[in-house]
Image 1 (cartoon, rainbow, N blue to C red):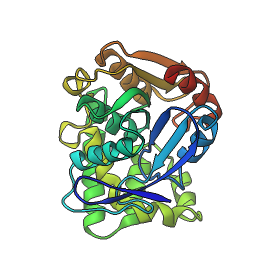
Image 2: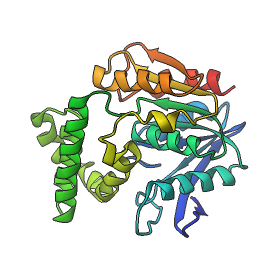
Image 3: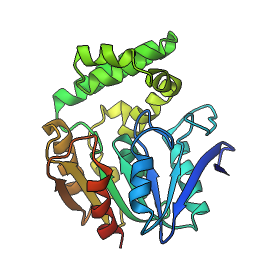
Image 4: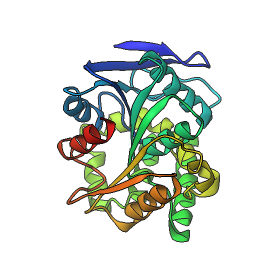
Length: 262
């Protein structure tokens, strides 16, 4: 494990694998270097790239410093990119895609940007559901009910109640609860005060080549925001991976990234 110090003094843990031009992976909610899609993606990309995976603040081996703001996470990503040589291609997945888009809009050293299904809200009903989710999340965390905070996210993501009950009893549930306090960070990256609406004003400032990807088997509630993001980012490419869902297979996504990052 390696660490880099972010602008506010927070220690950010990262790992490096492979060789070639640098690629930094930005995880979505509840995920970090040891849990989520990053390890499999890093393995797939390592033959072509030096792959940097890192624990977003408050997760895994990274520290955290109050008060939180989205700008702190943008600074964290910038610190990792600086460690990678000052410029890197970036892949953001889910809410990590929203964070990466905001970082690109601020001119962080991203050379090329790929995002997979940033879960913005593309219509009024989604924005209302997001506001309800954030209210439930904040109440659960204020009461110290980390499990209920995770459950609020899963419910917002349309997980059936019977599957959620089973997941609560699964061995990985404590790992979810451990990082539950960072769920508001993901909500902030999506734009908590705007109901996670697609931030066209922000996306219009993204000035690096951008690829927006979604899964052909994902619900319209995820595919519509992907299309909207591709339309809002100047010159962005949009691609659909047939048969894929929000839990995209690394061996399907990685070849698209290798071609785009080349």
